[in-house]
Every structure is written in C-alpha cells, then in structure tokens.
Length: 139
Ligand code: CMP
Image: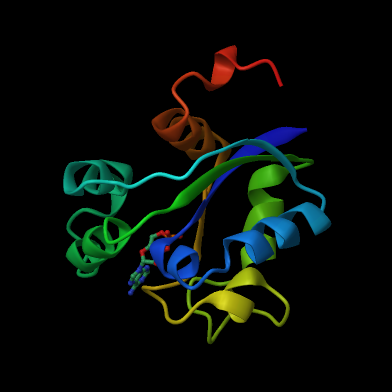
C-alpha cells in the first residue's frame, strides 16, 4: 500500500462537489487517512506550486488556489499515485476519460476540480505540506 495527496480545489468546493468527490474516491477503493478544510494565502499557494514558477499559467494558478477553501486529503491504495491520476483523468476536462473526476466535475484546464501528486516523492512532500503531524497520527 502507498499514499498520495488529493486536493479538492476551490471550484469544486464552492460548487458543493466535495462530498461526491470523496465518495467517488472511496468507491474506487481509496482509504481516507487524513483530511481537512484549508485556505491558502498567496505565499502558501506559491510555495505549494513552486515547480510551476515561471510557467505562463503560474499567477492564475496561484490566484485560483487562494480564492476559496480547499480540501486536502491523504489517500491510501495499492500504487496510490498512479491509481489517483487515473481516477481524476487528464488535466484538461475536455481530454479526460469518461467517468473520471475531472470529466464529471471540472470546468476547465485551470479550474479543474482536483489535484493529485505526480510521484511518490512529491506525495511525501505534499502530504507534509498540509499534514505536518502526519507521521505521528496513529490511524
Ligand atoms: P494540477 O494537477 O493541480 O497541477 C498544476 C496545475 O496547473 C494543473 O493542475 C492545472 O490546473 C493548472 N494549469 C492551468 N493552466 C495550465 C496549463 N496551460 N497547462 C498545465 N496546467 C495548467
């Protein structure tokens, strides 16, 4: 079993899709290990997405991610990183496969409902970003 981080983004939280998305993840077989409602400030959003600094969409991404509450979730499954990326679908909902979370709930490439870690190493870093006490939680 391995871990990954999902974030239900401001568009999906504001639209009232959080419950449906969490249910979708559980029905796919993920176990929810930690979850909270959070609100990022600009510095935190820039830090979280620092690998994208310099990309043309970086400023819009930061503004969007700080625009409202988000729901970071630590998920456990067999091969969790790969499984979650398959479950959420392509970055652009127009290119996402039928039945994926982004196909069902995302508005656009920028406002795309959910984030998923892209590697085991980034999953560890991103889990620690939102749940600094994660290692000490006995779940
Ligand atoms: P996410 O998986 O959270 O990681 C980086 C985010 O940048 C991505 O989802 C998109 O929401 C966002 N983004 C906005 N515009 C683009 C773009 N043109 N190409 C890639 N990612 C983009």
